[in-house]
Image (cartoon, rainbow, N blue to C red):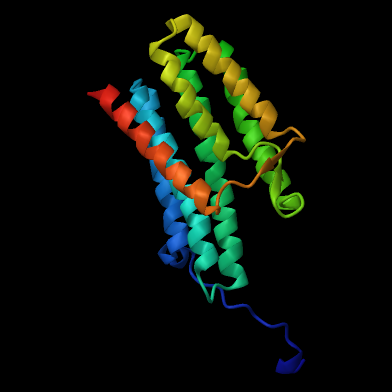
Length: 217
């Protein structure tokens, strides 16, 4: 067989080469924030965990904004970035809330179903989105996962108001509601990328960071 008839070989870059991409750096920074949140959830320092969870959302939004403004990205660059972002989202918005719930419940078996459901809903929601994309190019089918962290961080403000038992029931119920909304057929707007929403997220993040930072003192 002549060389002209041989299938074209695709030159594959090294795995580590993708780390230098600014959007991927942002994605990994968000993962670092989630690791921070998981670490402090396990230690029971929940106010610090809240700070990590909300900053994970910031970096998740930032990676997409940066990617859309970059020129010269190849199809492989885009695909890798989307896959990385999707896998990290499961950790950010599924695993972190699940570990938070388990830690709050002192790792009692009764909290395992809720922890499983929030992780499973995240995986199913992302698989569906990766298959079908946006609905009508402007809305998600099901509640977007970044809302999980934003809601939980707000709900946790009631931790100091409600009794420990009542708050535990409240956060468990909220986890189940979020999981159900993640895989529901409701249509929700795409929040990230809109300058007004970016400003609101920045304000919300700074406010929550300030409140929980003060509570840590």
